[in-house]
Every structure is written in structure tokens, then in C-alpha cells.
Image (tube, rainbow, N blue to C red; front, side):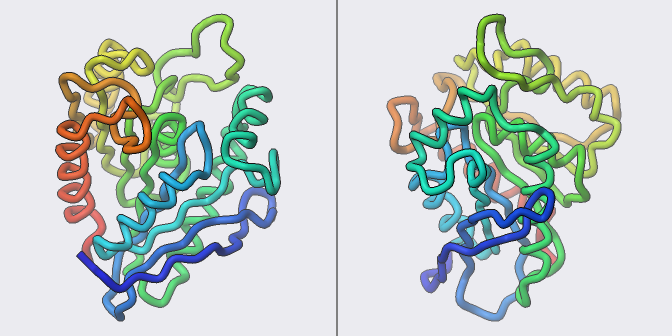
Length: 247
């Protein structure tokens, strides 16, 4: 664990050359380090997500979280921004890929970077992490309970996301998936289906599903938080990134 950190708001180049707000955290030493793009959940670019970004820096990684809602709700609170994005059916996949790609370029440009980069996302960010892994050159990706990777959103919901399984042949890196057995989106059946698809395609992946946990079990500021599952999930993340981002 690093105790001396620097965390600050920066501007990165995102999709279409747009300037995108982002939160950047790094350890204050000269050691070469891998980079992690933290992709926020549907509730938005909030305090909890920035805390997660700092946590990666404390473990020795360069970490940046782009505000994917910069365009849709500039200057709005995370709650208002999330409401605006929900009303529009979510974010276009190509826009997310462009913003995450810009965050990856930002990390690779840092003097401390060892050149290796990964994504991690929670909730809708889990789906976006998988999307990025199928669209961009990565060294690793973590999907924390990302829904609508293998199935469409339920009828009647406002979301326009579509399944990503047709992109599996383009998956560029190993994937770690962390899920709750009591989750509905994605359900255990969806997790098993994705596991089978990745296995059939010969893609390197590692899935863990935790008993007694539902959606958002990592979220320390929400009633869904499940400490035992979250602690096991963090241990899996540290092992996974140690394997794939060291160098």
C-alpha cells in the first residue's frame, strides 16, 4: 500500500476529440506502474467511484476515471447527470469506447507508465469494461456485475444497450468477472451463458460468483454492500492485476 498519493481532476481527449473531465490518482514515487481505467456505474461519476480510483493508486497503479456524462449533463451533480442519461436510454457504445480509449492513451502517456493498461467497471461500467476489451487493445479487463452483455434489457426499460456477444471474437485480453448469485441483472443464468461463450471461443477468463450477494455488492455507500463478497472480490482483482499489469 502506498501512503503518499496525488489525486486531481484533469481533462482528457475523448470521443471525437471532445474534452472530457476525469479524475486521476497516482502514487507519489518513481516506480513504473500499470494503469487502470475505472469506469463508473450508472449512478455516475460520484464520490464512491473517485474513492475506488484512489484505492488503485494506493495499491501502486496509475488510475483514471473519465466522467462519461460530461456531455450529457455538464456541471450537474452525479444524481442529476445519471437521471439525464437514463432518460436518453444510456450512452452510445461508440462514445464510451472513444472516451475509454482516450483515458487509456492518457495513462500510457504518463512518465510512470509501464505501458500496460486495464479497465474495470461496475454495473453499467462492467458492461462498458467488457465492451472496451472487445474494442481496444488492453492487457486485462474486469467486469463487476455488468448486465446486458449476453441479453437485451427487459421490455419496458428505457435502456438502448444491446448484447455484446457478437464482439467476443475481438476480445483483446483476459477478463475477470465478479458477480452476485442473488443478482437479477445479470442473473446467474446470464453469467453461465457468457462463461460458456467465452470458453467456446477459447478466450482467457476467470469468473467468480458470490453467495449472499446481489447487484452492487462492492458499493460501500449503499444497502447492497456485502463486505465478505467485496473483500473476496478485491482479493481476486489484486491477484488478476498483479499477473497482467506487472512489468
